[in-house]
Length: 73
Image (cartoon, rainbow, N blue to C red; front, top):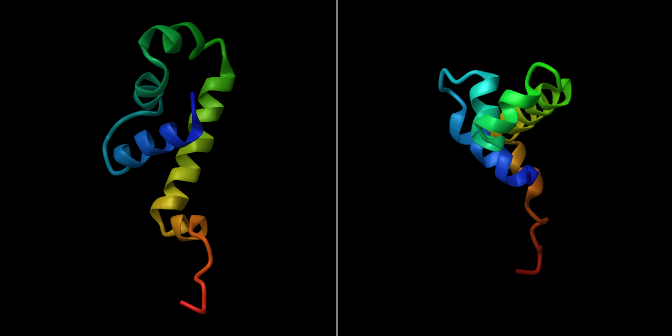
């Protein structure tokens, strides 16, 4: 799963009542989540990290992704 695609999914979900598991299903699919969610703690950790990152982007952190302005233009 590409991080940028996952972050876009999570950004769309910010403000909804979706659970972390619901978000994981959107990203990885029901089958993978069913197999990994309780036994593979990595998936839960990854979703939490991406949620924090998406919240930071939503709060204005996306500006840091832009290249610096060219003062000569």
